[in-house]
Length: 325
Image (cartoon, rainbow, N blue to C red):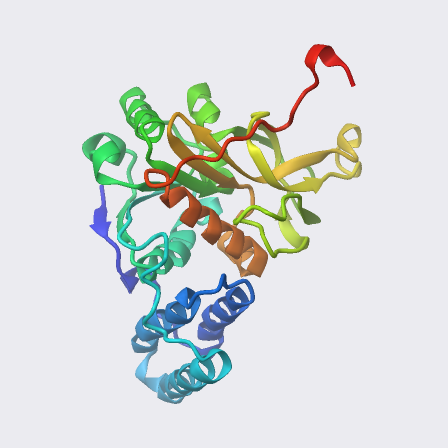
């Protein structure tokens, strides 16, 4: 079992300017969706602060170039104070990040994307690679948010009960792809909490489009439709989730589902707890798509306020009484 406060030591040493540029590109892409605050500027500073020492001595020139670029580009292009950001919803929030299960979904690499980012926004994060944490920790009283990145596997009865009771009692829950939406296939109450369950991805990794369906919600406001090259999740869904984005399937791999729109991003409530889910994120590189990354960040922020803000009400979709049109 490994339970630890997080640090950037989880990152593998980066030995080339090419790999560093990936992190810089990811940051500047997210700036396009910044929500009138300076959190993302501060994220760049913190990311580079820890990435630069990891480069080998032989790449001193590259290290110097990256540091100089960060120093010049952030203030001149955006003119914001990189140390601001205490207004982040994640500030001072206590987060449990659980990762494990099937490693094909790269839970370790996804951990290395989101944990440092949450810490940069002021969250106090505990990382665990065991489901025993659900029973060994006081979830309900000691945490504001649980992020689970655990595809397939088996959860024991007491572990599931502790998780369900924590969320029902007001702890937020957030996740993506199979790490939340295909975790424990035999546990229907868990699926009831999440609001959906993966059942297929016809064609495997394919090109598909994500359509933003709610342009007013804070998670998707200002975002446009975008394309993915990944697994297109076909999910069975609770009819009372608030759908924020969908994808439409063609008939090339399963003729009978052609033209059907299926939710990709949703939020819901379980008891008093906020639950956020996105089916994006098959592998860590999926979050190189700026919209996919931004949606996940916003959803995590929203779920972190579960104990502190009232839950909005919705009934979606609304069915006519008596089946009348």
